[in-house]
Length: 134
Image (cartoon, rainbow, N blue to C red):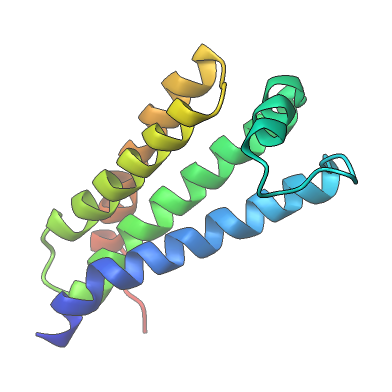
């Protein structure tokens, strides 16, 4: 029972950790301007508008890894083989991603891939059903 309760929060936490690590890598490779205040939304919008495609691609890669990880881990933690935990994780991440794409000026390719990538929670779910962790 505890696994079912913790499945979604743990899946979300592990997914966020994956996204964060990959996005931190992108910030290392494609740093923001030194004078930029991270809390300044207008400066952040300008940065996203002028960011290299690879910097934005790292965000999508982070979403992909986070989606897979959330689907896989939530399914394993729940332990009952139901996909609802992965779907809940995917929907929460999807709505958060749409919100971020709405407030930041992202190109259309980013919108398409940023929405589609959250389907990878189901790939994580399927992989969790086929893997035995000992």
